[in-house]
Every structure is written in C-alpha cells, then in structure tokens.
Length: 252
Length: 335
Image (cartoon, rainbow over all chains, first blue to last red; front, side, top):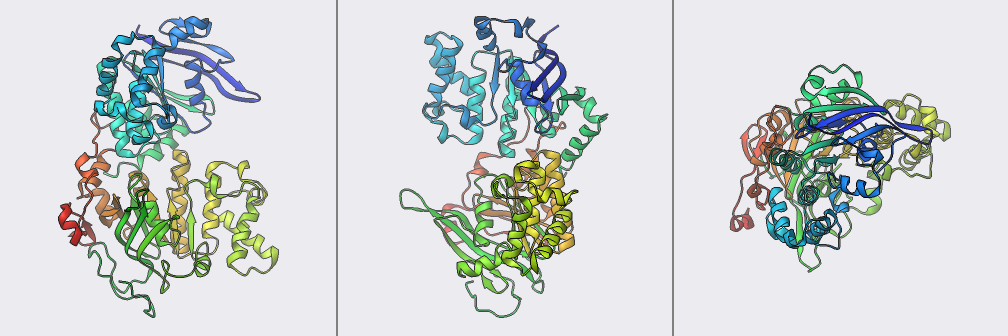
C-alpha cells in the first residue's frame, strides 16, 4: 500500500455545532483527492485536522503510517515537514515585508535545509512553478494573483513534502490564471509524485484535477469514490445539485 | 458625439463600432458612447483604464461584460451610471432618457440611481446595513423614490418584493437583521432593493461570485426571470463563462469581452460563446477546466495577447458580431 494520508471516522464539534460527523478517507502517493462541498460543509475543518492544526474530538489520522494525533511536539514538528499547505489567498500568506527570496529562505530554514544549498534551491523551486528567477527580488505586492499563488506553491514544495493540502487554492484566481496554476499542480505531481488533498467548492476544477472525490454536506460524507464514477452517476441529491451548477459551464 | 440637447427618443445609431449595434428604431435604456475613464497615477500622469468604449442597452436584453480582474469592466459600469470612482476623469456620453448621466448634477443623478437604474452589488454583506432590519432597508429605498401611501402600502410592497425574489417566509425575513440570513438570501434581498422601483436598467456586478456555486446559479436564474417579468435591461458583469452562458440565454442577449479597457469582441451570446473569433475569448473558453482536458494541458491565455495594449475598433465578422484586431502603437494614436 502506498497510502500517505488517511483518516478514520473524524468527529469535530465547535460548541453545540458539529462540523464533522465521522468522515473517513485515504489518499495514495501521486494521487489527488478532491474534497467538495459548500461553505459550512466542514471541508476546511477537515483540512486543518489532517494537518493537526485542529484536534478532532474523536477519530484517527495517519500520515505515512504514523498516527498523527499521537505524536509529541518534536515528532509533530518533523511530521509537519511532510505535509504542506497551499492557502486560498497567497497575498495574505506571503510575508509582505520580505522579498520572494526571503520568503522562500524563511521556509527553507524552518524545514532544516542546509544553508549552502538555499541559493540554488530557490531558483530550482521557481523554475518548477514556471517563474523566471527575476522574481526572487520582487515583493509580494508586486506580483499578480497567479504569480503569488505560484510562489506559495513553490514554498510548499520546498522540501519535497508527501502531501499538499490545497485549501481553495485556485478559487480566488481569474479563470485563465487558474488554468496556469492547475497546470502547475499537474506538472508537479507528475514530476515529484506528491499527493494532493484538494479542497474546492468548484466541481469543474475538482473534476479536472482529482482522481478521487469526497463530497461533504453539513459535515457528512454524502458521496465518495473515483471522480469519474461519482460524477457520471451521482447518487446523492446534493451532488446532483452541485453537478447541475457546473454543467452549464463549458458552452461548447 | 457630445450632443446632449437632442429631444425625443434617440433614433440615431452612434458612429461607433458598426458590429453588435442595435437597429436604429430600437429604444435604448441607456446608450454609452466613446466612454473613456482615466486615473491620475502618483507621477501625475493620466492612465487610461477604459478606452473609448461604447455599448447600448435595450429593454429586456441582457448584456454580459466578460473580462478578468483589471480589465476595466467594473469601472466602465460604474462610470456610465454616474458612479465613477473618486478621482476618475470620465469622457464620452451616457444617454439615459435624453439626459447625459456624465454631465447632469448630482441631485438629478440621485433621482435616477436606485430608482430607474438598480445596482446589484458583488458582495451583499457590505451593501446591506448591518444595524437595520431587512424590511426597513427595502422600505427606505421605496420611500426615497416613490410616493408610497403610508406605512401599510410600503409594507405590502416590501413583502411583495421579497416574494418576487423567492423568499418563502417574507414576514419573518423582513424582521431579521442581515447577519441572521444566509449569503444567498442576502443577495436576493439586494436584488429586491435593486428592483423595488421597477428600474429600466439593472447593473449586476459579479452578483454570484461571492456565493456558493449552486446558490449563485439560483441567484443568476432569478435575475434572468426578473428580466422577463419586469422587461428590464441588464448589464451583467462576470469573469465566468459558465455564468455568462446561463444569464445570456435568449436570442437577443449579447456578450462583450473586455481586455485592458477595450471591448475586443462583441456579439450575440451564441456567436461569442460558441463561435469566438478573438484569440483572447477563445483562450478564456479553452481555459475552463474539465475532465475532457488532460491534466497539465489546460489552455492559457498567451502573454502577447494579454499584454497587447492597442486594439482596433470592432470589425464585423458576421451580422451583429465584431472582433477587434491588434494595432501597432503608432496606428493606435489615430484609430
């Protein structure tokens, strides 16, 4: 088995509100799991739990065979290097007072990468997301949305993580820029075999990028399986509604 | 074309782009001609954000303005309805009921905005007053523009409006504060306020992009229904091709594609969305993600198209369908 990330029966409540009612999934190396749902469905909560930014009330999470919830602080620090976040709005996620180079150096230091390789590593990282090295001198506010998102991706892949958690990573982008970033994700995955936990409310994007899909509605899994199977024959009325919302796209 | 003294309904086709223009006998709700908007940048230089754009809006017709962020679509829509952003210099004409909205006083504008031109904002969270109940906010607009006979008549009209935008429990919702209802409902309330005085034109600026996909679709369908019911012209701004196809679903509806402050393709929705001629429009349509395209092979807009600053006037390619051609810098000065 090549499972890099798995969760079993995750339950999470905030006060009287239950955000997740027993959600399970597993994600294999080199694959993408699309997590779909509307706002309030619990998809971001699930994303934060698998990174252990939140602790669930019950349930278990395995990162590469290790029980993520049982790790102590130093083990967790090491484990977190293997799972990285690509945020929704990269302009808020990059430090505005640092250049792209300094932002990436900051990450490399946190990852424990030897200092003498930093200079060559950052150029390679930008090349991987198809940005020319000139951008190393730019500040985040000088970048367009798509460029900033690609810098955020390059930062996330700095130390070859096993899993990328992409929380609405392309939702804030224009359609043509979104296409570039989706291409970047696909190229990276083909190159490095990174697994992606891809959270989105846009079924068209998920249909394009994911191998498997998990549809959440009010904290419950209403549908899961291979993307093509689920979308070809949705069993749940909620999935059908989401699908109807996406089928009017693509006029040709 | 700055003749604002004309009397009677406008009967002349403006000497703008020939393609996509309406037949001369059709009365226009709003006719914008040669509108340019520029802002003074920090160095004191004026930079042009909207460059000589003309569009006419016909009753019961949807015009979709399609473009990406920074293309000038919102600035154009705000400018032609007299709501140009602070510091903008606006040239051209926007004729509405024989008056040029770019020249009339603020006071006259106030009798038109909200009354005969309705606005649906992108984000209803910031356009509704969080401190006041929903019913009161609708009644306020009614009282501002229409002489309603007493509180009961205003209340009845408010309930009627809420029902019209498919709110099932209007009496209860009217007593709620904006934070007590969902985002989709807030957007429908914003639409109710926009249509409360039976406007001739509704400007909807990305009304669905702040909402969840399925909720957004319902809001857009609601606007489409209202167009038929109220016989209103709709200027619909979006960056989403799917949403454009959803709202512009009738034969007369048009799509205008905007790029760096120019309209580069204009035609009926079926022509532009199914038979696009401009490379930018084609790239936008091809960039739409789908399972049919292999991963990593989505089309991207070529940089030379995106960075091209000068485009010609629209050149007709078929009746009602015009496409702009790229121009050299030198040619653009005289174009």
